[in-house]
Length: 565
Image (cartoon, rainbow, N blue to C red; front, side, top):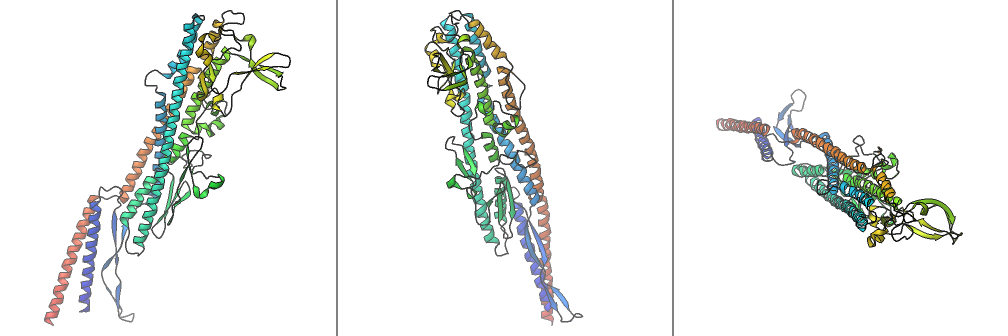
């Protein structure tokens, strides 16, 4: 009789477990198309056994049926880590390609007049002046074309800086997004620990949501994660603790007072009061896939933007190592610096022809010793129609004059060249500091074209300018050292930028396919197969029916025993 009622327990457990397995299967089928849903699998185990008899010879065990051991949240840890690493790498190159494409748009080579034509128009104006150096119309043509050139290049440079500011805004937004995702993970950690603290229920839906957040976070920065026994996950960003069981250590965007650029830092590792900051990214390490340093959209944006506006001093005369470790790391700063270098070389070459200099040593009346100082070369210089000394330059610096008048102890007058500043752009022949000489805008005939004796000298000047235009003695940067003229310089600059964009976009496309392939492998583990789940449903339905029939048979047997005996 006892065995008979025990059999009812066996049937009841089978009935109950089959019903729970059917519910799990139905939940899987209902979420076939739910993004990020991880299929659930039921694991069965024997219930406890009843031991009958107290000796080894007559001891018997009576089983009480099955029990659900666990509902498994199926994931592959290694595939998750692989997916998130490659997802971050794909985002890095995708963001880099987007920045390059935006920078190419700034040059507007496919819209309206090409910038190269604007450059050529300046030299064509000098050639026209050669035909009639005495006419005001030709003098005006030089200043007009030079003004248009300067306006165009200033607009391009300004558009670059404006685009740099837009990238800076994206950096700030990305930092905010990372912190929001961190708070989501922290809240989900707490909810999962609360649900699973009793050791009975597994927070499946919450775990799925947390895994989706980790996937999204992996595209923004380099992510490392590990799960604790209590169900929470610890997350590291760029090898620094970001989220643990109880806290989130937010990333902070520190704004530079001069540039307004945002730099991601870790406040918990910084001494803010003393101005000591721990940057999120270490750019002293090479960017490469081997070192896993090419991961995350945020890093790509910070790297592409750079830390300041590039000028010719960031590229002129640098070695390959110095260039690659400096402005060469930032595609935007490199573009700015190379454009500024071209303009600097162009305007200083023209100015040095119109108002040449030489090196002398003398002592001024105030006792200042001028050793190997550059001064206006009066013997070889030309003057304008007004005959005033020194000869005018075409392109001036906004913050200072070309020369300072100095009298030596022997009574001779020197016009000492004011050397360019190393920090103040208004005192440099750079795009931000350039203006057309106000004296020439006031009176075009002041443009040097006459020898000291009043004879025309424009043929000689025009020949020198043509030679400067055609001379192949310029290089774009330390990695592109083939000499070229100004026309070739600009072409190489555009080609090099386009090549970088092509490389980034190709890598991003290839990595998109790889990430998709990895995700497909993940889906084979975590994804729901409707065919497989329908098969399971039939299996569990049949098991449920069998358990029901089993209970009916046992019930009839017990009824028979009770009524007959």
